[in-house]
Length: 140
Image (tube, rainbow, N blue to C red):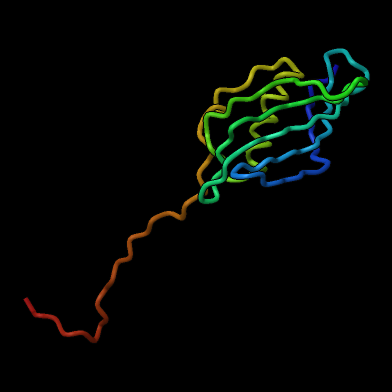
């Protein structure tokens, strides 16, 4: 028996600016195993995100997930992002957590809803200065 072994691969990504909004479309292939399945289920999926970009920060307005079927594209879900993202790749990764949950039936972890990790800051250091041996001191 397999665990769900969900995998995703971005086939291509396109970004276009229209008026004051930006549209990102990512085409993906997804695969996973259902319990007791002998082979993986594979689907084509696309994520379409409409967003504003302010000072390098992506503010999503709408994220739509579609799946390709024999009769064309079918909407799977519309995601409501309550956060901003550093990049379109971060936004796609965030969306994939929900897509994985949808297809595998495994609930989304609460950490998915937390703020994205800030870039790691270097530790703050306190620099101590010692007088050189040649400096003059008042003697006690």
